[in-house]
Amino acid sequence: MCGIVGYIGKRPAQDFLLEGLKRLEYRGYDSAGIALLDNGKIKTVKALGKVAELQLKMERSTSSAMAGIAHTRWATHGKPSEKNAHPHIDCKGDVAVVHNGIIENYRELKEALGKRGHAFRSETDTEVIAHLLEEEMSAQGRSASGGKIREVDFEKAFVAMLKQLKGAYGIVAMATKNPEIMLAARLSSPLVLGIGQEEMFIASDASALVGDVKRIVYLDDNEIAVIGKEGYVVKTLSSRKREKEELPLEWNKTVAEHSGYAHFMLKEIFEQPKSFADALRGRLIPGEGKARLGGLRTVEKRLRSINRIVIVSCGTSYHSALVGEYMLEEYAGIKAEVEMASEFRYRKPLLDKKTAVIAISQSGETADTLAAIREAKEKGALVLGIVNVVGSTIARETDAGVYCHAGPEISVASTKAFTSQLAILALLSLYLGRQRGLTLVMGKRIAKELLQIPKYMERVLTQAKAIKKLAKKYAKQAHYLYLGRKYNYPNALEGALKIKEIAYVPAQGYPTGEMKHGPIALIDASVVSVMIMPKDSVYEKNVSGMEEILARGGKILAIATDGDAMLAKKADVIFIPKTLEMLTPLLAVIPLQLFAYYVAVERGYDIDKPRNLAKSVTVE
Ligand code: M6R
Image 1 (spheres, rainbow, N blue to C red):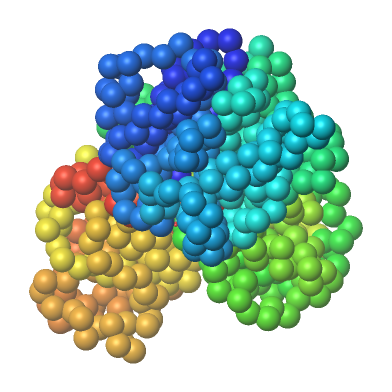
Image 2 (cartoon, helix red, strand yellow):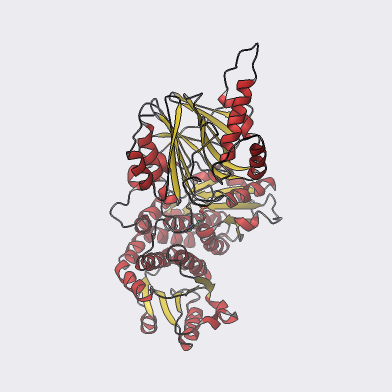
């Protein structure tokens, strides 16, 4: 996904801009560019490919400009190329803009601007923003009063330009005529201000600001920010000033470093015992078999009257939601349903005051999930969030919620966010369950077992070498099936998603019981079935499914409970410790993550930058 950074202050802007772009590299992009404003002139430098290419070009002509904007682009309109890379400038080179999102009416705007004499250099939707700004600024300059040319009001021109746009945007602009400020605006595409000492920063993602600022401010939809060296003002489009909450940026620099791991994905897989423990911290009362969820305090009463839960999410967060559906029904005794947010937004969902809609999202910025909760709010449902990024849009727009506290997840392929989401869903089941019929004895068992999970995860991780060997053995497979039942059916979907995303191997996840309804036709000696079959209530059913596959010559790689000697005789096996059935996905997913990772390594792919993918999907 595209990334934005901007700086205005007391030191050469290009140092932060390049560093900020590097911190956003994980989001995925195809080209990058910088615009610097110095001595009344805008200078742009662009490069196809990595930020390192841009840095090389910059080194040839370092600049002492103290204001600048920069961008990593992920092509939507127009192929990846230098000319399509941002920042884009107007005809005269007096304004420069960077933009995330999509301008839906750009064709009409471009045609009209063309007729009025504007010359376009790129195929992007973004370039219309620069030309519209040019037009609005010169309209102001021309409107002479008493023969005097009026001073151009950049802010007024910016607002007039915004009013012509339809679609989604996070925009940052600067102009030679007003070098002391930068302007930013947001509609459905995140922007965050970073507050420094005599310097201000802006970015599309707080991770770009780590190490440079300690306080941040998130912009909301339909807000603009005027930022200068001395500070910032946030306003509505009708120029009303908005008081904004300044939040601490608590991440430290190591989150954006590999810390000795070959890739962020591997680092984050290994972080799971800690991130899981962090998700539980202070939230369990083991002696009472209860969970304490401070983020839900304000809606506690209303939650008691809820009789239905609908969870909306996408991708990996959708898979954790599916596990949550089993947990909530079994232990909280509440009817639960899971909807892909991208579908939910186009249905006519039946929601009422007794329904709680829960959005699960790592980034808290996923456009589909955001649209789904807006729809749910409209319909009067209680809207809750299970979100990782503190202060993100979904976190702000929900009525209440619980943070995952997984720390920043840099890898495009989500891993630790999944297990942290499961931690919160287990806590929520305990919390709601104990409000309803869940017994003290069962509550205590769940709480006790949750506290054991980090230790069990460590044990699974010690098998990384063995999993690497298996990945080597199976790396050339053309197709994988992932099979599981009940709590581990969502894990089958998640395992298949992981290997598709980073190793680019076609893979399908199915409930084991569904095999005989069609997919078993795929089985022959060339197909590997990854079967998740811990000793749980559906173990025997899984064994029957495995026998059917073996009988047709298929190969099995099984995730099994420690000591399952029978399976070890029939298949390649990765073992996980015995735990409560509802918690098995937390352990079984780790071998699936590692297997996908090592297969991708074997195949020689760039794991932290999977092709065609972006970390945070802020457009529809
Ligand atoms: O930030 P979110 O959790 O809302 O993101 C949802 C999906 O886009 C995300 O999980 C995606 O599927 C990942 N690439 C999975 O690894």
